[in-house]
Length: 580
Image (tube, rainbow, N blue to C red; front, side, top):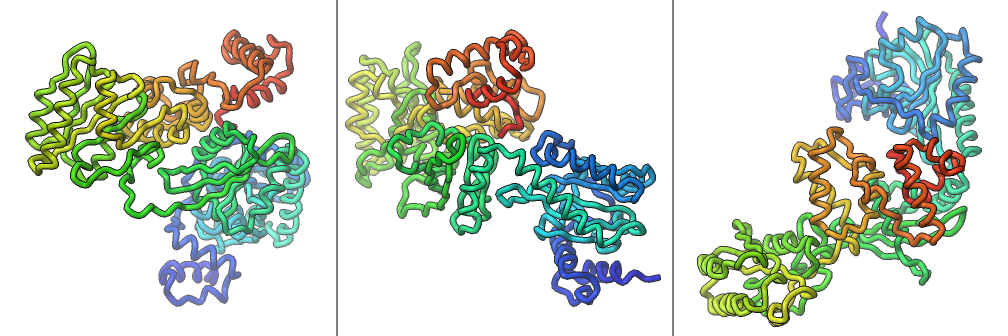
């Protein structure tokens, strides 16, 4: 006997999204909408779910749902039904059934822990569709988009956090012959019990975050509310946040001086996004409300700097030069290792010069080939002379002649090449300082410790260069440690550290434990009291003595393990890679 639902689904697949179909009169509107989303996403309908990853059983959702699922499994014994719990990505994190034959049937359809039942993966189904529709749904037989599920029926409902965000879904399902639409009411009840347990178990801090966030849920302004462990975003704010931006914003805002009571203003994401943040003291500890806005590119901006922000490149810009000498000389000042040479190269590219750049590095151990530099400039080659702060007073005349000849030849139209200099005026000889003062600065870089907002972007670029195959990435906890470390060697130290890790760490994710010990133990940006500093040192010593075993470290310190975990978070020593 023909199945009109299956035929309607096949017809819609055949004619496509723009074709005429009779499916609208055969299935509920929400099923038809889901079918269309499945077709639009190119979901495979002929084979069971293939996406799989290990189950995360330490989530807030799982901890709240586990006792409820166990209790209902006992009550549903001999009904032939199964309980499923999925996380917000659609992955099944728990399955409860007491019937061995049903379990085998579900296994054949890959309806088991670890498999991805989002709409993007298997199309129309209870777990995934209920989260997209944000309502309880009942899907049976051929209403499923995937043929492997055609013999099943399920009722499902989204599970929401106290702030109203969908955190997962709960489903009661089984073979179509034992299913009943009344399961929908039962599923709603189970979902409400899980939500109630999450509310009861919520930290006071979570409640404070949720209360702050509720004011911005329907706002059209991109907004997030965040603390160290949690981040809530309204719909316009979603494109601006991820794990990396959470780490970066927390470190920057936590170290900001809030004594004035004024909001903090930051420029992020390669100078294209402005952040306005304010500190909220409601609840057991402070959290932040953050608003985002896109910045328009300033008219006639001289620096766009692919890969670096204008803030990075031009913290201090010299007075405008004349058109005649503007491209003859480029001078970048800043501490060694702060990315001066990179900035100089970017400035040159922004002026439309893409030819190979000759690089000469000044060293106190050997004479500088000034004649070679002059010949290259005469021949039309751009030359970068690095570390002119190392030019001794006795050679200042050579640099002076080079600069004067370059400027005169450029003004006279005899040269088109550019001479680029990097220097650190604080460490340069009087002769070099006088030359730089006469030329004027093009840009100035700052120490990495003063521009920590650069670190996430620098980490990505360094890993891209050190690991072209893209096999490595930093965990959130490792990135947080990088944000907290002072980097006395500036960008050069960061480059050396990450490059070494790429070669030393076999795993794809570089965890905090892989970092050098001094970076792992970098104190949080906020100022610690004398007691906190002493406590932090004692915890570090205890962890070293017990080789990282927290239970033994807590016993050695004479405190409970729960207390140790809390102090680890508060003192910036939490090495739980899933905590962010």
